[in-house]
Amino acid sequence: MAGIATVTFSSGFANAPRLLHLRQQFLGASLSFLYKQSFSMMGFNGQLRQKRPNFARKLVIKAARTESKGVELGSRAPHFELPEPLTGKTWTLEDFEAYPALLVIFICNHCPFVIHLKKDIVKLANFYMKKGLAVVAISSNSAVTHPQDGPNFMAEEARLLNYPFPYLYDETQEVAKDFGAVCTPEFFLFKKDGRRPFELVYHGQFDDSRPSNNVPVTGRDLSLAIDCVLSGQPVPSVQKPSIGCSIKWHPGRKL
Image 1 (cartoon, one colour):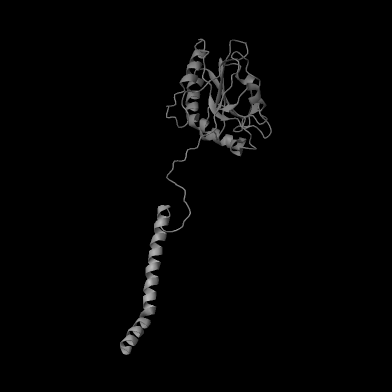
Image 2 (image 1 turned 180 degrees about the horizontal axis):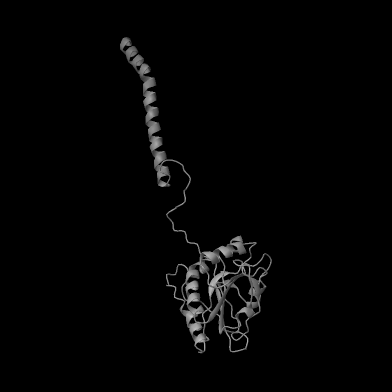
C-alpha cells in the first residue's frame, strides 16, 4: 500500500510541470481569443492601427462665387490708360472712339470661371469684331497675392490663346474701381451714337454655363445684347448678373 501510494504520488508530482504548462497554454489561448473578439467588434480586426482616410471619397472643390453688382445702365464708360503686357503698347478709351460698340471684359489668368469661358470668349470676339465691335480685356488682380495673374503671365496667356483683343494690366486697380467691377469674368457692353460718349447698355452674364453645372457654353446672353447694339435695337433691360471669382484686391484694399 505504501509502495503504491508512493508510486502514485511520485507520478503526479513528476507530471505537475507538464500539466501546469498545458493549463497555461489553455488559458493563454482563451484570453487571446477573447482579446481578438473584443477588438474585432470595435473594428480593429485583432490589432491596433490608426484610422486611415477614405481616399475613395470624392473631393469637390468649389471656387468662391461673386456676382457682378448693379451698375447703372446708361452710364458713361470711364476713361482708362493701361499698358498691354504682350506688346508694351498703352491703350486708352479714345483708341476705340471710332467703333459703334465697345465690350470691356474684366478677366484674369487663374479664375476657374474665366478658364471655363476663355476659349468661347475668343470665338465670340473674333466673330463680332468682324462686324464692328471693339473688344478690350482688363486684369485688375493683385500680382502681390496672385503672381500668376501678373503682367508676364498675362502676356503668355494672350499669346497662347491668340487673343484678338488687347489684354491690359490695371496695376493700381483704379480702373476696376471706376467701372465698378468686382468679379472675373465681368462684361460691360457700351454703345456709341455718333459723337456721343460710350453709354453702358449691358452689364450681365455670358450665359448660364458655369464650371461643373453641365450647361453648354453658348454665349447666348451676351451675343443677344451685342446683336441688338449692332443692329440699332434696344437691349433688354432684364439682365442676369455675371458670376465669377472676386477681383483680388491688393492687401488692405477693397472696392
